[in-house]
Amino acid sequence: MEPAAPPPVSHVIPQGGHAAGGSTARGLRRRQYAVLALTFAAYAAFHASRKPPSIVKAVLSADWAPFSGPRGTQHLGELDVAFLSTYAAAMFAAGHLADRVDLRVLLAAAMLASGAASAALGAAYFLDVHSLAFFLAAQVASGVVQSAGWPCVVAVVGNWFGHTSSRGTIMGVWTSHTSVGNIAGSFLAAAVLEFGWGWSFLVPAFVIAALGVVVLVFLVAHPSDVGLELDAMEVEMNGEGGEEVELLVEEKKEVEVDDEFEVEMGSQLPRAIGFLEAWRLPGVAPYAFCLFFSKLVAYTFLYWLPFYIRNNAVAGQFLSHKASGILSIVFDIGGVLGGISAGFLSDAIGARAITSVLFLLLSIPALILYRAFGSISMRHNIGLMFLSGFFVNGPYSLITTAVATDLGTQDAIKGNSRALATVSAIIDGTGSVGAALGPLLTGYISTRGWNSVFFMLIVSTSLALVFLIRIARDEIVAKIGARH
Image 1 (spheres, one colour):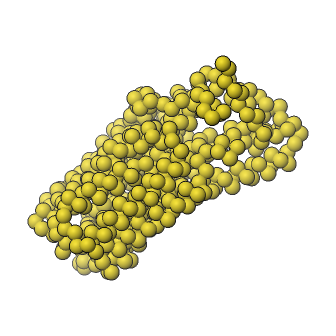
Image 2 (cartoon, rainbow, N blue to C red; image 1 turned 60 degrees about the vertical axis):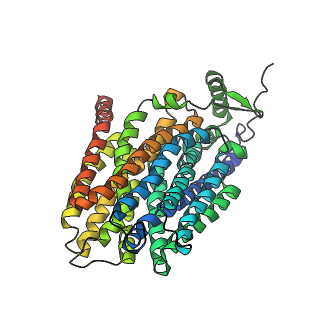
Image 3 (cartoon, rainbow, N blue to C red; image 1 turned 180 degrees about the vertical axis):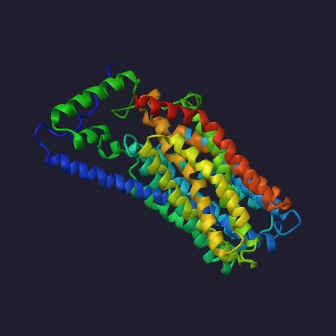
């Protein structure tokens, strides 16, 4: 039996009719902005809910068993790795799941569950819980539910912006949600810390749960959910008349036949890509392993920077717990501008790997300078911390967004949008393994001195460079060849 023909594309401009096209184009832009805003807020909330453990570290190590004993620092590192290792392991399954279920429902459920997990950690303060097993279990649960967030938001944004020429710039701005979330989480957690460290968890928990409800009600995960076809819309905004639109629709039908679309509820959708098949896509493995080391560095700062500032004098004075948490925001402010700059530069020169390599190279002297001269004065500390955040977060942001979207919609899979969540999960999941390793190692290495920690960060950055050298070289060769 022949499958039912797809429904007619009602929004295509009739020949000679431009008024309706302009209105539809404006409607598309409004929906795209709404999607960007909602996914930005959603993932910023995820990061805000991850920030409290780093803010309360110094308090826990001072007077809350089991983190105040001789092995307190190691236990704090184990707490980090409980979340991050579970997050990394669950990320691969979450990406596979996100390609097969309703992204809006999965994202909202992950946000509500993340709020519950963060609230459980806060409740430990009010219930006077001192069991390491309880803290570890809460972090494991948090890692599992938070793993669904990233593949969902990347897939949703990819659905709406997958064919945009300025993807790097858009993603660079959008991916500042990571640093904005860190800033918001640091500020919220530090602001209420004086009332008891439990509130540092409860306030971000409420924020992410409330935003989860907003996502469930308002997020549109795919243009087709509201009767829009993004490819046709692009021709509609740029084409001269109905003849060009008709050609695009005919070409799309040919792609549907070639890609073996599946029939689902009267519409045709591409098949989801397999996990191993996604790993074999060009560029996926090198970028994934590069992100392993890049994220190791970024998450070491995310989880240990307030503790580092608290325990290292600036201009001969030690800062309070609250001041240390607020000062650490400077790193994330640098990260916001670094991510945007990396995206803009990669669009301008048309080379993601070259941009990433440049930022990684410059992050090495930035880290050395921050460790060597950051304690001279507050001005030195702020300036060098900002530079470190700028260069460390630049390639990390670029790889997890624009690069992942490029790889998830490349020609090798003929633009199959249902591969995007799987590819982004592989890249970010591999990176998250490094993110788990960095804070864990820091908990042990810091007992030997912070110079050893910074040496580890510099070595990790150098290894991240190694995995991109071949791709960067190919980009350079392609650029030279294009000029001849």
